[in-house]
Length: 97
Image (cartoon, rainbow, N blue to C red; front, side):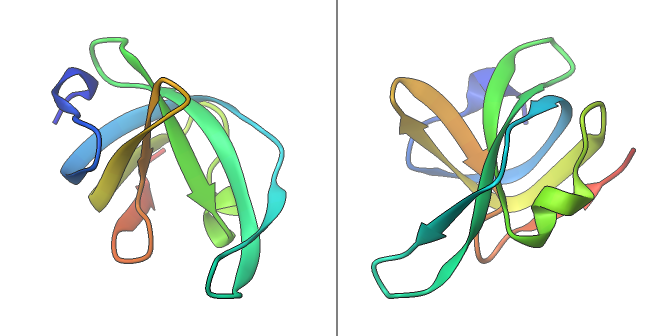
């Protein structure tokens, strides 16, 4: 799957991206009361098209700038006019290096 194929509020079967930069982690609280950390990253696909990636909890430490990642069974949404991809709760994020 390529970034240009992503549509808001849809599933991501499999997408491979290269992380260009990773932002600072910040704390969050969900509506259900759970807490954790989230960080935003900028990534590109093989065609050089950029997309934002949400990194959650342990993913923040595992993923570094210039890493190649694969997200399987993730989701995509539009946030402040930008597409944002995440493995979410039920998906998987692998670091391929």
